[in-house]
Structures are given as structure tokens and as C-alpha cells.
Image (tube, rainbow over all chains, first blue to last red; front, top):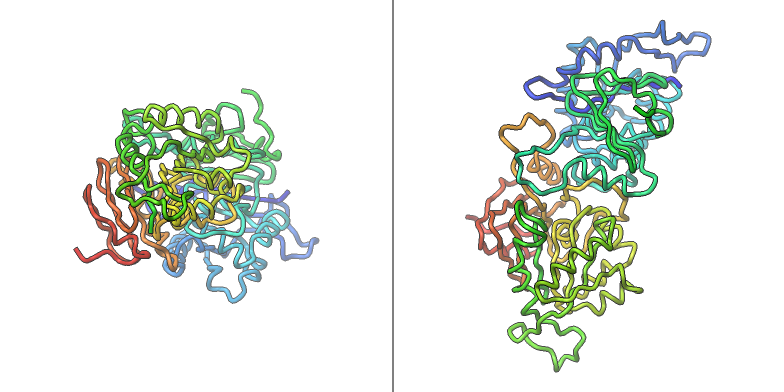
Length: 264
Length: 264
């Protein structure tokens, strides 16, 4: 299993610039990648001698103005030393995915993003490139949602109707980005985030949900998963109490097909 | 056009009991209904001499525990003088809709509610009873969402996949229940409610969206719509600034097939 994922809760942290809070993680992530998919097998390098990514394929489908979004992402990635191509500028999106050295799927509206991924027929090709070829995948917010089993734990409004809520499926669990606790001073009576996730777990066969607070991210390397960033994360499992995990926690158990966490 | 609708933002207001904040409106609404569908036309009464509803058909599909939800709703409606039958206890849901004197569709998860309405094949029959027979329809939260064009402006998580986001369509616009402004002191960076509705309006052919704050409700009688309750409402139209409407406002322009509001 070659997969390498950097799944970020949010692209902008309060008081910071676009991707500012995770820029060191981005450099670590794309800077030491085992990129070997398009080479004959005898030329492939091991993870330890992995090759740096020079150019990242950006997916701006989650926002309406794809050109403006690409400029924002390109500016940031160039300051970090990477070229950035956008899939919406490619004449053949599937071919662009086939050639990509790395993916960055940006945030916005998750329904719009997933529908566009299906409309452009790149869902299974992205999965293949990540899972079989080891092409690194970075997602932020909606781009993190679509990396999981389904978009059923997004916070976004269903502004368009995708053909399915099933997503790219790079991990066997779901994530709730921008996770937050209710404000204890609020008089608002709408469901809390935790109540919404509990409703999801009332449905049969629903996987675990990792609540990633703003400032946190999950690094997945093969069968290892580690919590990075500046905040704890909260794990919700069907029929069990939620569990908080500290920064740096090894969450590899989440990758064993949605199985239960070890008793703590 | 006989339709009579009471579309409530929320079933429980901070500090109050279940449906407490709108109980007088419920009594007004079901107490003077033009219920005449099952009578021969010569026996039908006009709106002015309308007949009181004795029993309301409850739809508890939005919550997982339908029995418990029905007990809660039944207790409340009985204190107001109405019997309450639940559609989930009927052997034939479509037949229950055909016989209903009034509808109350409760809140919970909007996706679960709409999927169950489709699964039980009652969407078009509810529409027919309300629009043609004048059977009064009360919705709260998710039950208000499904009364509109689509559920595309719900706040809920997409925990199940309905066959469509198109809803019962009793009015030609959408509602966002539990509408709220962002807390100015918050450091949370997820999209505000207004930003989410703006994203909806970036999509083509999207209708107006009425943001109903907790405490407010919309009364629709034929081609008249009036804002009731304790809070103002905010109307969002494609490509135009949002507009606030005071309590008691005549919002009948919303019923003319999503047309623009008069200049103010």
C-alpha cells in the first residue's frame, strides 16, 4: 500500500493566510515523495529514496470561480517551490490525472466538488493513482471529505445533486472537517455537530468519523496515520462514546477497514 | 389555489418546550381550516366557513426513533385539542395521506425525511392533497425544508442518499430554517450560512431562499404569505443583495413562481 495523504481540516486558520498554518507540512509532504508510477519497475525508488514532487495537479472544482481559485493556489504553491497545474485547464482531465506527480484538492462546496469529479470521470483514476502508484494526495476541507468513504459527514449545503455520496475512498472511514463543539453561550437550537454525526451513526453500516478541528490534519503513509497540527481530534464510532486524541497520536487503527480503536 | 401552510423554522425555541413558541399559531392554523376534500363539491364550504381539523397526520420520518417522536408530538397536539395519527403506524402510508385532515411533518434530518417520503411514495400524494384539496400542512425545520422546491438549502448532514433533492414543492422558493448570522467573536473559519446560500445561488436556475430565523414562521394561505413569530427574516435572491423583512410582512410576491420582490 503506497498511499500518501495529507488531509487538512481547513485551508485558512483564523488570523493566518491561505494554507499558512500547514505550509511546513505541505513541504514535508510533497518534498520526499515516492513518485515512481510512470517509471518502469526496475527504475522505481523506494520510499526512503523517494523523489520530490515538482508540479502538483490542483482540483478547483469546489469553488465557482475556478480561475481565481487556481491563481490563489498557484501563488501559494509557487512560494513553496512547486509548480501548480489546474485540472480545469487541461483538455483531458483523466489524462491530467494519469500524468500527475501529486494532487491538491481544494476546499469549497463538497457536493459541487464530488459532482464535478464524477462529471469529469476522474474519481476512480485518482483512486488508482494514489492507491497503486503512490501519487501523494493533499486535500483541504471539501478536498478532505472526498478522500474518505463518502461525503455524508460534510458540513456543506447540498447545492447540486451528485450521482452518489460515495467518494474517492482512499481511507475506510469518514472525516468531519472544521469540527467544533457548540458555543456554551449560544441560544441556537439547531443540532450540534456531534448530534449530526450521531444521526449518521443511527444509519446502518456507517464508518467511524474523525472530527478534525480547524488547525489539525491527518498524515497517512501506507498503513500509518498520524494526527498533526495544533488541535486534538475527536473520533466518533457507531454506538460508542466519542474519544479525544492528542496531537501526534498514532491513528493507524483507523486504516484497518473501519475496525474499532484499541481500548484505552 | 387552496393551499394552507404553516412553515416553522424550529420546533423548540431556547428556554421553551416542544412547539411552545408557536402553539397559538398551531391552534389558529388547524382550527379554521377549509377541509372539504372528501366531500362532494356541493357540500364544500368556503374558507370563511371552514371546518376545524380534529386529527392531524404526523410524519416522524426525520428522526430515527419514530415511536418516541410520535409520543412527543402526540402529547403536544393533544394538549392543543387535536388527535394525532402517525404515518409510520399506518398499514398503507399513501392511504393515510389520502384520508388526512391535516399534516404535521416534524424536524430532524432532512435527507432522512425526504428519502423516507420517496421510499413510501407519498411525495406527490401529499402535494395533491395540499394543493388541490386544501389540506393544511404544518412543517417544522426539516418538515419546512421538504415543503419547498428542494432540500438544497438544508443545514443537515447528508447521512442518507435520497433519489433526488427535489421536494414536495408546495411553494416556488426555498427556505433555510434555523437561519443565523455568524458570531462576530468567533474564530471559526467554516463558511457562514450566508456564504453557503450564496454558493447555492452561483448555480443556475436556483430559486430565492428565505432565511427563517429561530422563532419565525411563514403562514401561506392561497396566494398570500405572511411572516409570523418573533424575529425578522432575510431573503436571498440570485445576484442581488439580501433583504430583511419585518414581522408581519406580506411576502406574497414569493409565491409568484420565484419572481423578484417589489423594489423597496
